[in-house]
Length: 176
Image (cartoon, rainbow, N blue to C red; front, top):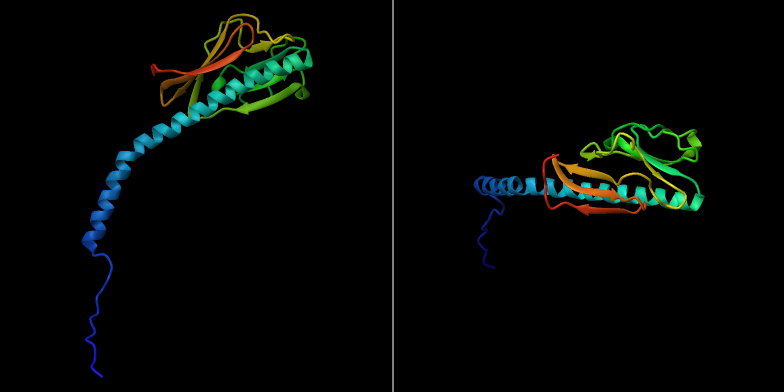
């Protein structure tokens, strides 16, 4: 029986091939990373916009359902109203039109803020919170909360005097 010659072929990558592959991969990651970060930031801002819109609509529905005033205000701890929307907000029963929840059981919902995003809510001095009346309306001027992502205006939520909340993405990404 004739013997076959044993050719031992080594399969695998050489060091040069491995280095070239890693260089190409590194280049692709460097090109794609900024776009990926921008996409994630935009998705977070969209989620926050929808959450804020939902909170305002839910507070309006609670006011109509309960037949009493319901307020939404900025809050950093979920127990009392503060001045900055970026740290979160709470919804509370407000039958006596107080600037703070009267008791812990009056708090209906708390939404913690997102540190990666900024919320701007330029309101008048007389309107630090949003109060819905039993008919669903909201007295005073329109409330506009602007959401900023990565230092640029991304979107906003607007509540009109009738109490209806709407949101929109901004085409003009002006600095915040």
